[in-house]
Image (cartoon, rainbow, N blue to C red):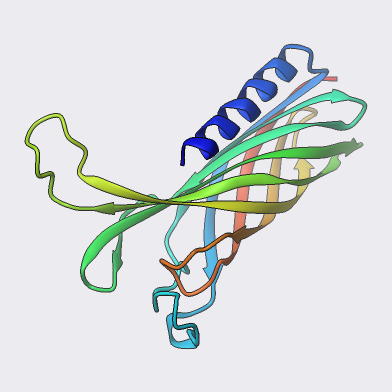
Length: 194
């Protein structure tokens, strides 16, 4: 976990340094949903029979384009409400990633392709045992690879609506039926610069 935190901090530092020299910044907010293998399709003896499918996931993302159409992207998506994990405990998955991004605008239509790394952090909510000042959850964190694509439809020269698709490859995701998770999103964004 410590290595993942250091790695994430390093990517975040590079991302924020790149935004200082960016030619273009894209910021977006939207909603998304997840799809993964169903619990009834679980044939694994190591994975729990719990699907990640379902729920509404708000998402926030920022792109910094600094070399022609290439740049860096960071995004986070979290489940808006807690789900019920095997009728035992509530949970909330959070996905975050840092990517290389290729974003291009052609008249009133644009697109973005991204790929990188991130993590799935699932919070399992439990009663705090140490009194005031303690968290009421434990986290299960897993490294993830990420690929994504977006179609950006500009309604003004700088504001766009973007349907997106993202694929996560979550390493050792034994908490859920599958480590392959697809996220579908609809975002509203703004392009600054260029």
